[in-house]
Length: 162
Image 1 (cartoon, one colour):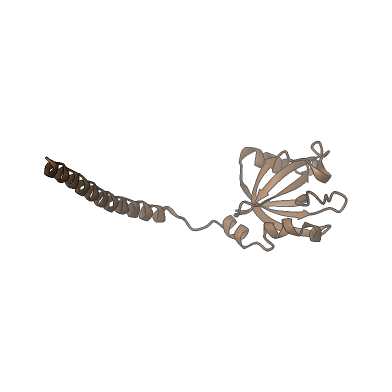
Image 2 (cartoon, one colour; image 1 turned 60 degrees about the vertical axis):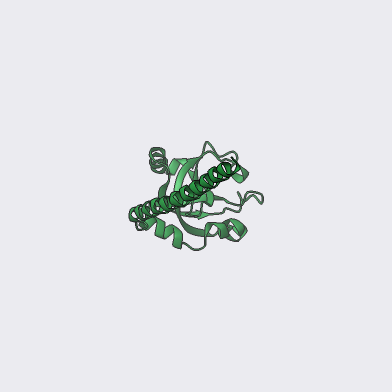
């Protein structure tokens, strides 16, 4: 009887080892197929992606050194969407300015405020679609600068990236 129990136990262990080996082999082949399919679907970066990736200074540098951009115009590229972030020097500007969030390819964002009276077309564009690739000319105005929220900028102009 002991011999039969030992035999059944060894048989069970052997079966489990064989299933484990075969299962891993099939998984590897499955992953290879998925990987090659994924690689075929990857497309070349768009013009917007290239401009955003290549831009200097990077958003993280602009955020970290925002005080250096007080009253200096700079051009930036990113994906824009409407926002409602009215704080700092723009906390009372919801009636006069549109709030725009611009994000780079690393997920870092800046907040830009455009005068409503001059930028209705921008508002309409961003109302219809999220993450619109744009080039913005911005400035960190000294009279609106806030040391705790230095990443808030005034929008001067915008242009669609095609």
